[in-house]
Length: 57
Image 1 (cartoon, rainbow, N blue to C red):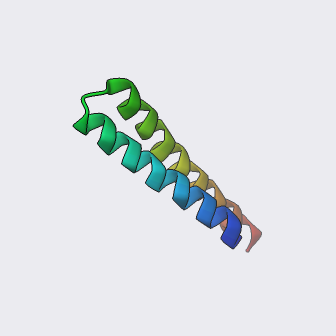
Image 2: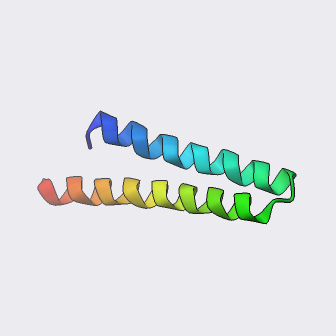
């Protein structure tokens, strides 16, 4: 997995966690849902990169 992609995916996941927490704290369901979507998207991309690396070996 390239370092750039790893950092980008991890940052997206962390950004999603923060947005989700702010949405929960402020009782803003739209922000909470958007944060959850960002977090899940980052996780899926990380999993895709790991699977791609496993297939290359």
